[in-house]
Length: 96
Image 1 (cartoon, one colour):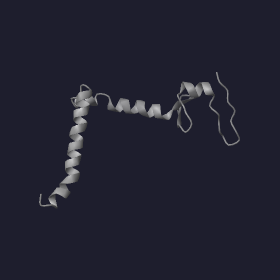
Image 2 (cartoon, rainbow, N blue to C red):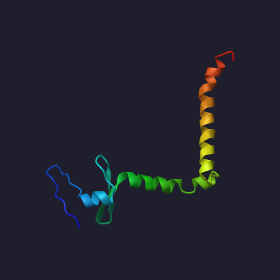
Image 3 (cartoon, rainbow, N blue to C red):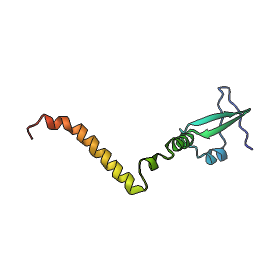
């Protein structure tokens, strides 16, 4: 168990062992999660990543993505479409 004191401004120093365990570095954000009569502190970036993973769960399979090659092919296809859309007005204005 770690103990920390609250300053007059409501600030708390997170003990080094806890910062290491939560992989917190200077400038990181933390989130306070209330559950029943307890409050938990967590690395906000990791919480956001876990939520995103949950939202994205199963999306790759539905899109037919099975491996890294499929991801690379999809990225190339999307880039090609974006390039064609962005360069279409330029091509229309020329006599090429």
